[in-house]
Structure formats: C-alpha cells, structure tokens
Image 1 (cartoon, rainbow, N blue to C red):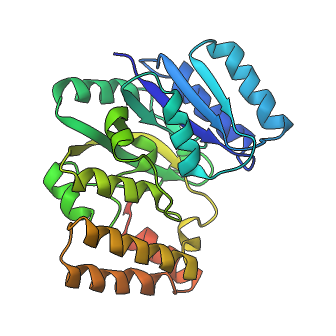
Image 2 (image 1 turned 90 degrees about the vertical axis):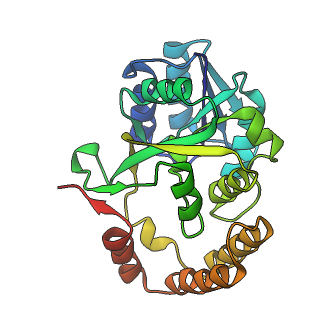
Length: 275
C-alpha cells in the first residue's frame, strides 16, 4: 500500500533528534513509505540543511523537500505539505520523535482491516533525552465511541502517530488557526462530521518531551485558546453547553497554576508510569 509521511521542520530542531527521526522512518522500518513530504517551515540553518541533504541522498526520490520562505507555524506548514502528498493515506510524524520499527506495518494492517476508519493513531511512550529513559505512557482511547466521549475533555489522538485520509482532511479545510491546538481542532471537526475514527492499543512511537514541556502550557494565551475550543465544541454540538462551560473553567484554572505544580499534574494524573 502506498502512503505518504508528512513532517514539518523548523530552525530550532535538534540535529541529533532529526537524524534519529529519519533513521526510524526509513532505515529501521519493516515497511518503508513510498513518499516522504518534509516541509521546511522557514530557513533552518546550515547544520540542519546539511542533515536534510544527507538524507535526500540516502532516501532519494521518495523524499520531497518543500521549502517555505518564512516560518508560518505548524498548521499552515502541514497544509502546504498536504498539497504535495500524492497518496490518499497520510501518516504524520514530528521531526524530533522516533517511530517504532513496526509502526507503519501495524497501521497499514489496521487500514486493510478497517476500511471505514478515516483517522486513527496509537499510543506513545514519552522520553526526555533517549528512549531508554522512557517512563511515561500517554494513552488514548481506542474505539470510536470512547474517542468521541474522551474528545469532550481532552485531545483524543497523539498527533505524531496519526494516519488520515487526505481527501477527508482537505474536505474539512485542513488545519485551521487555533493557537497551540490546531490538531485538537481538526480532530473535533472530523468527529463532528460523523466520520469513523480509532486508535491502536499498541505503542507505536517514542515521543520526545524534554525540559518540562507540559509545565509550560500555561498563561493567558492558552486560556484564549481554551475559549476558542469551547466555541468549537458548542458549534459542533459535541458537548452540552453547561458541561462545556464547566470544563472550560476547569481547564482554564489549570492554565493559571505554577509551572512546577502543573508539571506534576500532567505527569501524575494525565500520564501512566511505566513499571
């Protein structure tokens, strides 16, 4: 089965992380993609450019690099990349994460056995420096009904693991501006349109979080984004207004907590420790 892998790279990416990402997509996979679309979200600097050129030589024609003259942000960069994807099935990936060797094989098998599903992802293992220090699983529900219910409270997909039908995402207008939550916004629109979605129960990717990423998700800008999320859920009628309003207040309160406390909440309540 032909499929595209869609990535966006910007100048702050770590060189080693990018190397590991390419290695996991191409050399370590049991099934290789026939197309990789890499969007350069603005100038990326000499070091990263040399890395990209190196992998262009290794991968050859399947790696299609799309340079943008300036940084436009993840959502707009991915929309531009989608225009260049020649396959119906598009697999997302972040340039600092590492696919498990059988990721694509497992997702292709799922597609073949679930023809009605248009969007699905999988579980991830989060790590700080190397996958060997992985200690936390970010798990998401697997069935359509559970995902729909979960989506009322939290993002129901791990973005870097998703595979989706290009035609459906394009029909819904692709990624739209929603500060910090372009992916959540898109998933809600897919679910709200009545399309069938799912998640694999398997861990298919190692996700690099590092340096208290979760603890930095706070402040007034995030609260504005939460308000936009509230309006979207109401417009799509995915949640009763009173419940949506209560959840907005709860989520906004978390955004005002000190970083140290917020980080502990993410790690203790919203993640599962690996034993």
